Image (cartoon, rainbow, N blue to C red; front, side, top):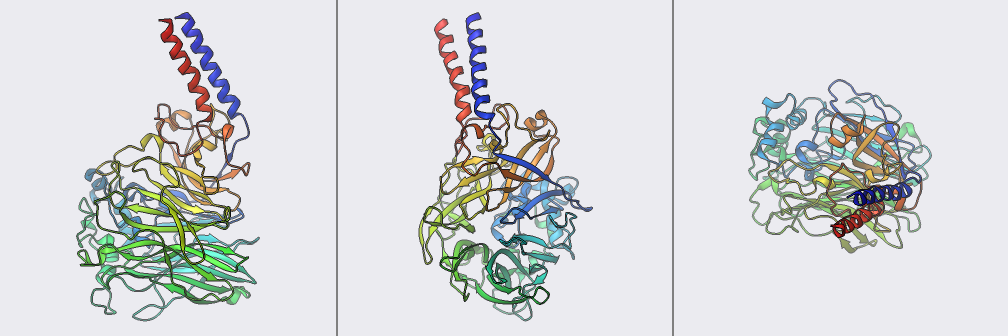
Length: 585
C-alpha cells in the first residue's frame, strides 16, 4: 500500500502539474463588474440587455420580480410582447407553481404573482432600466434594446407608461404606427437598429395594429386585451398553463402585432423624420387567433446594399377547428431582406416547421423565433434562432437553438442541432454578432437530467458558440487563471446567462457573485451582478484557456465543446494508478 500511496501522490502531482501547465496561460475572458443604482421596489437585478457593436455602451434593467423562477425564461430576455416566453404556462411541479403564484405566498416567494400584478397596474412598476450613460435605474427610463455601429452610437428601445402602453423610440423620438380603431398604436417596441450611413437608420421591432384575438372582427376592445390587463389574478394558480380560455395571462400582449420597420432620418437630431415602410403580420389562420410578429435583429451587407432582418411571424397551431380560439396563436421564425437604398414592404421568408398542438413527437414545435443574422461567415450567411418543442424529452419541454443558412431569397439549409447536447437539454440563443459568435444560456452540466416537467427546474449556465468553427463552450470554463483558481479580483462567479455580444466577441452577461469558493460550490450567499466579459485573444479558446469550472462531483456529461484538455491529464494518471493498484493485489 505504501507503493500505491506513493503512486497516488505522484499521479495526483503529475495531474495537477499537467493542469497547471495547461491553465497558467493568459485568461480568455476577464470580468468587469457593472454597478447600477436600484430604486425601491427593484428587487431583482441588475440584468443585462444590450451592448453596442464597439463595446463602449451597454444597457440593463432591474425587475420587481423574477420571471425565470416561474416561466423558465431568463429575466433579461423576458418580454410580454413575445408570447412564446410565457404562453405555455408553468409545467413545473404543481406545488412549485402554486408557491410562486398564489397571493398568500407573495412574501417572499410568489414572484409570478407579483409580475402579474404589475401587468394589471396603472403604471409600469415592473421594469427599471438604466444605461452606461445613466446608471441610476428608474421605471420612467427608456429600455435601450439596441445600439448603432458608429463612434457615437444611436439607440433604439422603448418607454412604457403602463404595461398596456409602450412606445418604440429612436434615441428619444417616438416611432409611430397606425392602430385600428384609430390613432397611433398604443403598443410598439424597437428591438434592432442598423446604420445605413448619411444619418439614415433602420429600426426594427413590433407594433400593435388592433386588439388581439377578436372573434367577430369588430373594433371594440377584445377579450384578449381585457383578460391580459384586467384579468382575475386569482385564476393563476396550479391550473395555469392548461388550454382553457379562463387562463388570462395567455392572452397577453392583448393586441395583434406586426413586424415593423421604421426608416429614420437623423440629419437634424432636433427634428428627426421617420416613416413606417415595412410591416407584415404574415398571419396564417383565422381572425380568432392572437397574431404576433416582430423583427429582432439586423445585418447590413454594404456590398450588395441589402439589409437582412431576423424575427418571427404569426402562425396557428390548430387553425382547422380553432378548438382553443384566440390561444391557438403561435410564432414561427422568419427573415426578411430589404434594400438599403429604397426600403419597401417585403414578405417574410419562413424558417422551419409549422407549430402544432400535437404532443405525439418530441420533434413537434410549439413555437420558433429568430434572434439575429450574421454577416458572411466562410462564404455563407446564417439566421440564428430557437425552436421550442411541444413534445416532452428527458422530463422537459426543451427550447433549443437552430442555425439556418440563407440566401437573399430562401432558406438554403437548416441545422436544428448545431451544438451536441443531451436529450431534452435547453440551449437558448440570445444574440449573434456579424462573425457568427452566438451567446445565450443552457442547462448546467450537473442539472441537465433534473426533472422539469412536474419537477423543480434546472440551473442555467451561459454558453458561447462559434458558427464558423463549430466550437462551443461554457463561459464559466473561460474565466479561470489556473486549474485551481477560477476567481477574479477576489470574487467567484457563476455566469448564468449571456445577453449580448459585440463585434469583437466581448459579452454582456448576468452572473451570480460569491465571496468564497465554498459559497460558490454550494450556491449560497450570492449577489446577482451584471458583468462585461472582455476577450484577451481573438481565436477560439482551447487547451490552457479552457478549465472545467463546475462544483466538485458534477457528472461528466456531453460538454458540447473542447473543455476536456486538462481534465484528460488529470484522469489518465488516476486511471493508471487504479490499474497498477489492482495489479499489486
